[in-house]
Image (tube, rainbow, N blue to C red):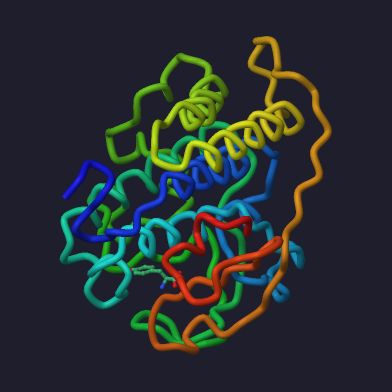
Length: 258
Ligand SMILES: N[C@@H](Cc1ccc(O)cc1)C(=O)O
């Protein structure tokens, strides 16, 4: 096994990480409503009326990590048995805490449950005051609510960089760190790093008092595909290629222009 292989996902491609970092940075740095930031669902019925689907949302980034790690992590009913699950979800919690620290006016919105689950029947209206069962709150002698958890400090913890420091420099640090990852596909990497730098320049919206990157205009293409996420009874990835790709070798698809 060489250093670039993992037992969970032998076909690991460094370009995936760079893409994830770029997506994460885009999710946090372009001013967004909570529906835009948090979910990949089309929220046609949500009270905020959001119809656009933001491709760089936290749920999609979270899903990508599950699928890229692979093994048990890509199977919903087994994922939490892999120790990496807990590192991954702690990081999702940290990313949410960064969002909370920056977007102080945005939070959980009213929506209608699309499907029945363990706690709600479909059609139930939920919002920031809905009980988060089974998480009991001693102080509130009931259950925690999203509104009571507007900050992780309600649970007596926080994350590095979310104290007195400037949160936007934490976000911008997330981005630039991704451009220096060493890996096998130097050409692909070089191109992606350049691309993310350009995105950095054109998308920097938060004023952190530091000089912004070069203001280069970049056109980003997104394909909006609506599908039944449960169609294949498991996780799957859809590739859209920009040019040629090796039709007989799916393991190489991640490294093709897509
Ligand atoms: N099913 C998700 C990925 C996922 C896998 C396991 C989980 O526990 C959560 C999410 C997808 O297809 O994108």
